[in-house]
Every structure is written in C-alpha cells, then in structure tokens.
Length: 119
Image 1: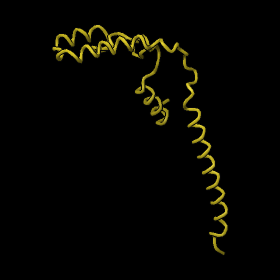
Image 2: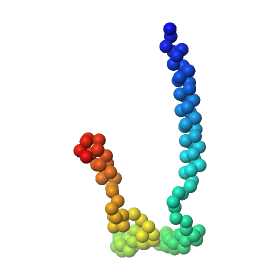
Image 3: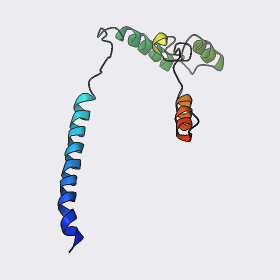
C-alpha cells in the first residue's frame, strides 16, 4: 500500500481551505483598511489654515539665504521645528500627555518576564 494515495486528498482539501482563507483575508484587509474606525471627524477646512501658514513660511525661508545657527535655534525653541512652530503640538503624543501609557520597552520586558516565568 502506498501512503501517498491516502494523503493526496487530505493535502488537496487542506490546500483549498488555505487558499480560500487567504483570499478572504486579502479581500477584507483591502476593504476594511480604508475605514478609519473610531476616528474623529473634522471639518474639511480645519487643517488648511495651518497648512497655508506653514506653506507661506516655507516659501519665505526658501527665498532667503540659509539661516544661521542662532536663527535656527531661536525658531526651534518656539515649537517643534523652524517652520511648523507649535502647530498641532497638543495633538502629538509625548511623555507629558501620555499619562500612564506603557512604553514598548516595558511591554517587551513584561512579555519576556511572562515567557521566562518570572511573573
């Protein structure tokens, strides 16, 4: 008796199931990825005012000679960088506004502790 006669139908059925699952997952990942679930809806013109100001400042900087170190440092101290200033600073995630969020290092350490059996 040849073992391959028994295993071929099982493998072909298993292959069909795997291909079907992959196709369905690709279909759902393509259709659902465009949906921003839980995203806050904003007015379409809300960000354009800031972008227009940033674009104007960028154009001014591009027309002038390169900034000196002192000018760059002075503009950077006002916000995130020379051009943006403090635009959307309140929306950025940083340690001051993250609260009790765990860092990636803490998450990895916790997982390794669980794997090692320390917890």
